[in-house]
Amino acid sequence: MEKPLQAEAIGILREVLEWRLPRVRWEQVGRRLDDVAGALAEGDPANLRNAVYALELSGPDRAARIEDVLVLAPPPPTRERVGELVHRLESSAEAPPAQVASGREDDASAG
Image 1 (cartoon, rainbow, N blue to C red):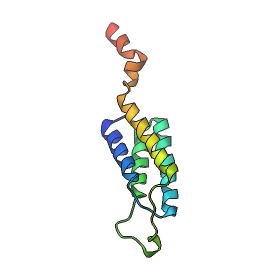
Image 2 (image 1 turned 45 degrees about the vertical axis):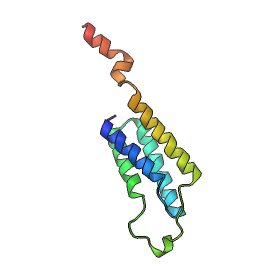
Image 3 (image 1 turned 60 degrees about the horizontal axis):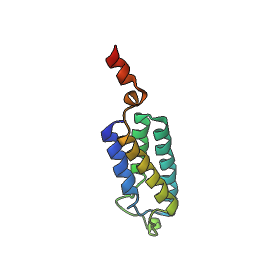
Image 4 (image 1 turned 180 degrees about the vertical axis):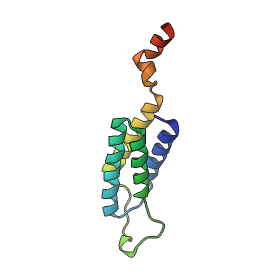
């Protein structure tokens, strides 16, 4: 996975923990977190980039609408999911590339 994309995803996920949103918007954030988790599982950088962008767009608006006066911190399940996703992203940053892990690098240098 591309380091800049990984860093951006981690940064936005950490921002989620600071957001204050109406309950309905937290439901939307939950769906976006599902998308991020799915893209991570697929290992598809383009899907991850799109999912992270959609998550970012689910964040707080600059101007609050009158019906959005009651805003809440992230619900505990959301905080937990964000923590899990950050951990997965950070763990994949520390993991060796697939070629090295599978031993292909040694095969290439032997031939």
